[in-house]
Length: 223
Image (cartoon, rainbow, N blue to C red; front, side):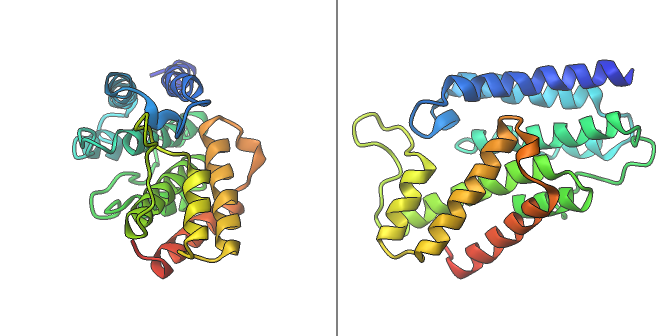
């Protein structure tokens, strides 16, 4: 596959994900309000693009078959993770690293999404790491809400509440300190920048601190 053609196809798939995010940007909880059909379409597009462009014999193609792309209720996290993997593949095409690429997907290594983010950071892929770590954080906060009896959906529409709203409610219920609330807001901003292509708004070191901080926060505040 010609490098420029591969990058163009990856960008087209990522653009479709970005269009869906933009469509729901003004709604409660953003892309989580997309329909199952819309998310299914994006997941299929991302996966087929990865299938098509993964070099024969690489870990991309071999391990993608094990990826849990059909787990109901985790469509947003799955689509974001696939975006992250495509960003990594794109970087390898751009830098001509595909002949010496280390395995990026491994069943044991990626036993949880934070491990995946940490591995991408080791490979200096800050953008997919930021998206994945941010998704882990949001899911953890929603589980914390269940422990404190805090609603994660709107009472009338049934839509997911925004991360800022549940973060504020958790702090009010003393689930964690106010300084944690501010830090979570900062982490969410990095994730949003990564999801919307604002890659220059943060650096590798910030994502490393973010990922390590999220792991520490989750260990101190189990859900």
